[in-house]
Image (cartoon, rainbow, N blue to C red; front, side):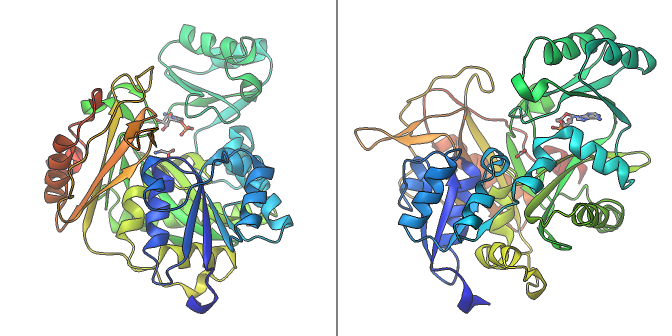
Length: 429
Ligand code: AMP
Ligand code: GLY
């Protein structure tokens, strides 16, 4: 296996997930050349970055050719849904991530709901509408809270959990009539509300084969104790013990295996990450959504916990050779605290100089998300989620102490982070 690994890898994307992928590929025992497009300030310190955006499909294909990348790893969902992996395949370049048909599992909530219902995979009952009147009639037949979802990709903003009918009606009108989400809102899904603790499972899939990655818990709300607006994710830890081995076995039996089989039965040759969002309800786990890529900031703690070479794992999935991989996971705990710019996910300042301690404490690392290198070669903030401050230890509480000590040491003007990453698991003990 190792002998056939590519000598040169291109990572596509610009966030924390992609920096984590760059670090994981650089740590591969096969010592590949690693390049990125477009990358960010932190990636640029470790790997050559090329100014091609992730959504520029012909640009990425041309770059991969020019730089003789033997393998491309696609981080974000948008280029997957635009068919980047199809275009690379047509150019003879193997890539990790589903083709456009598989990317629909994230890019269309209607498509996914139909698949879930067809294959009787546990999920909330729902109906699809493209006209306001029948949508409102359906709403009146259900009870609140109720969930209204725009069909397409909406950068995590296309889901409204409405507490009242008025709120649900406004969401339906905004999406269908108001063009709130553009083309992605032309169809809406109205779905019963599920209750319970949310969790997720990452699978590396290759056709009907898959391996289950370590379980991670994200923290989606901007504020401590799960208050404030929804974000892309404010912090993660792994292992997440809310998913006991018994529960994981049930999730595997009722959700993972049926999902992978359903996708294959639909004729989709899925090779990439299937990230399944779950609600752990009183009656069992139910699917909230599929994502067709690694989570951000889940990746920041998943990959460092693998004893198995991440690059070899992704390559094996792409080559249809996943059965050759025996996944080994380190017995430690890892945490990532997202350090954001105050105001995120609303408006926030950019361009603020960031100072990091000259030497990081042992068992800590910093993953850059929204950073850039300015004209004076200074690292500056360039996004809402700026850094992921990560640590590992033999216990979650020591990992948390290490990560938070480093959060206190680094500086930029509008630095903001949640203080309670991992608190739920720490308080349970
Ligand atoms: P999604 O993008 O479909 O995962 O939805 C985003 C968020 O909305 C999820 O992470 C949940 O917090 C919430 N959500 C989505 N669907 C439901 C549902 N049926 N019941 C309760 N909450 C939901
Ligand atoms: N952290 C959640 C996501 O990547 O969608």
